[in-house]
Amino acid sequence: ALLAKAGVEATIAVLPWDEAYSRAQRSANACVYGTARVENREKLFKWYGPVGSNVWALYALPSFDKKIETARDARFFRIGGVKNDAKVDFMRAEGASSIREADRDSDNPARLAKPKNDPVAIDLWITSQATAKATAAAAGVKDLKEVLVVKRQDLYLACNPRTEKAILDKLEAASRK
Image 1 (cartoon, rainbow, N blue to C red):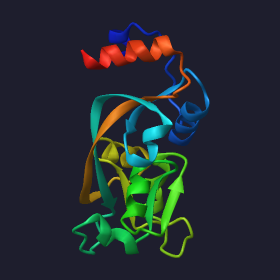
Image 2: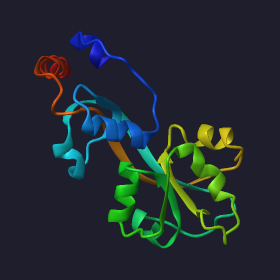
Image 3: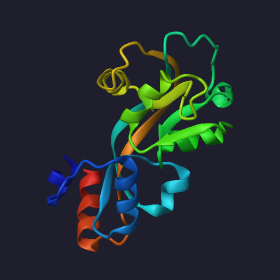
């Protein structure tokens, strides 16, 4: 909607998060949509929005019976997340040291069901509340429980700063309307 309001034509592609994020950093005229605007990313992009919001949550199988009241409480568990994802960075900042990163979020639900001695097994999965259950079901994990809502985060369109100035100006004007 922001692109249409700005009158900017774009080719939109659905890519694995790490690839989309990396491409937007290295390629002029590239943006990544649905991006958390967090401190360590602030200078990497030109930001437009917010264009949406996201709720981050930790999920587990129903058999998970540990009490977790804060993100920091999860630091002792093996947590599955996505490479270069702000949720993973957030959990690291909360002290989590056993994070298992995947290329795609869809890889994580099955890792919850792996035997505990499997090196890719996870206890918890940090993901978006809006897509967790559907992603798990598509991966064959039918039973999933939300353990903790970790954070609510606005989402932005993040563009490479070397994008053509005319495009950035149009996006800036449209984001103020």
